[in-house]
Image 1 (cartoon, rainbow, N blue to C red):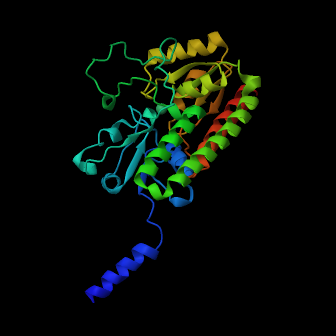
Image 2 (cartoon, rainbow, N blue to C red; image 1 turned 90 degrees about the horizontal axis):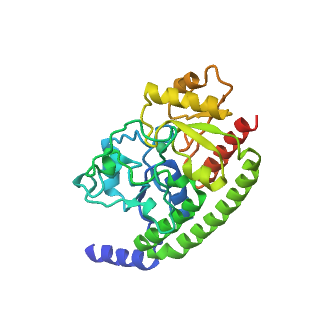
Image 3 (cartoon, helix red, strand yellow; image 1 turned 60 degrees about the horizontal axis):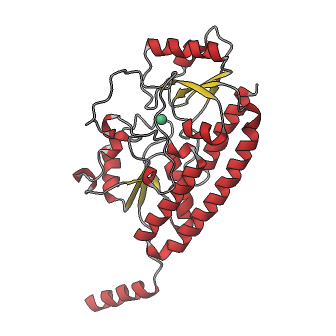
Length: 309
Ligand SMILES: [Zn+2]
């Protein structure tokens, strides 16, 4: 009997199906989508954080933390975006697993946290030097995926990490990352053409998440209601934003589906600004390879609809 089992095992090793793809967990919809595009037919990465929940308010269940411990690879943006998640990296809770921070990928452009106007954090106190990203101190703006060029670099990094974990599919991962880059180039070109007529229209965003997108496409964002970490704005900041809407003749103020829109209603009341919706994360998108390019197209369409109206 034992001999038969050994023979069966040997037969499976030589003639059985290819080894299963690595078990992959991802943090937010854009990361899941980029990694899904790279994995292609080899497998599907799990998603921890639904797009309806802000990237800055991530809460994880014990079952999700256990799943992280079972994963072969965990991809996150890192460097303060998913602050609570990042504190688990390397801990006993996740079997000592080190998460891959895609914002460290070669070729990723990092922009500083914006200062001046209504971009800066509310708190005037300088952050203590010892404070960590897990405590909400950011060394750069972590919304890196909103530059499509960064997404290509993230895909290349994911392909390299997947290939290390699963060398049998290395060529598939590389080919998928290359195909993703081509698709993103086409998407970017279409968005640049679509947004060209509204490039100079000033607008205000809900939280300071769109610096990368604005810079890539040459847009005129003039401020944000809440800061880069989506902290609740003070009354003083709201007054500053209102002043900015009036002074710049901002055409639109954009709320986000992850947050209540009351504050947007308050700041635009009595001004000529219209309310629009920008979604930096993918609240209504089905996770998978199509979500990321759709996220970019949705942001472009929302900007064009409101600013061009
Ligand atoms: Zn954000």
